[in-house]
Length: 176
Image (tube, rainbow, N blue to C red; front, side, top):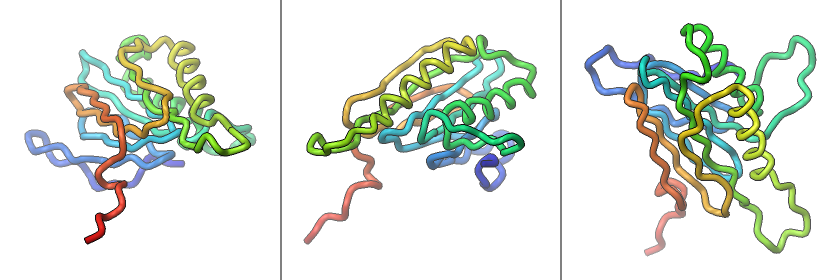
């Protein structure tokens, strides 16, 4: 999946635009306020403290078997991180220069379910493995449990925040 379609960022000196990343989407660059809501999905945030650039991906599943010539798809953890790595290389930087955070992977299926797919757990394992494999500096982690998370990354400052619990936008409307 190509990078998410979005309007261009404002000129330098103007407020950064907020990008709400949906599952399978990612962004990398020097500016923007990136926000995503996670259940069993996982988000990886990256930030280069000297260059003030970074990004985030939001993936649904750890991996897939990709056919030859098939484009990378941000819905899969290994491919989402590869898309970010391509941008890192284009900027002449290296994974070990980035601060990384790993969030999400909640168990969102009720305990009464007879079948558990452990998607959240598998997504977490993939995130740990990929960050370690490429040598990123892991700075923050909030994974597992049963609660959704809202994650934001403010660029170019690299400020990462996470809020646990339902998003205000995901709550059903109150009845009179």
